[in-house]
Image 1 (cartoon, rainbow, N blue to C red):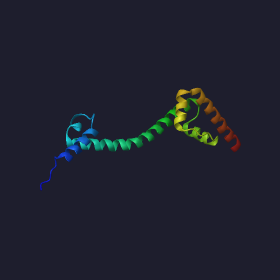
Image 2: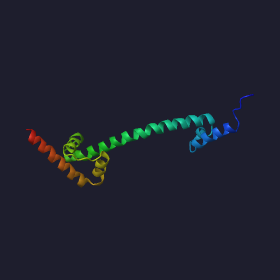
Image 3: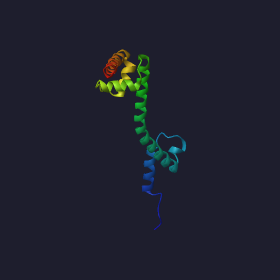
Length: 125
């Protein structure tokens, strides 16, 4: 018996891939071979970028925190060290939001950390 590639099951398979490629531009949503390639590439990149997004957001938070600290006379690494010394557990996300939305509260937190760092210097000397 000859092999049938275009029966009901084949059409259903193509229809399924077409449903995945809705909204794609040009042949990526029209042509059967292109559809499958485009969808698989989209799945690969979306899987990878869901993980990459976490790294990029943490880097952005670190940059925002550092930018808010510089005018206050402190840098990021010393600030994080001071937070650990004072046992203040705030995530980078919260610290970045605090720096952007409530600069005066962030300044008070930086002042507390500076006091702890200065006290540490005095006791170690």
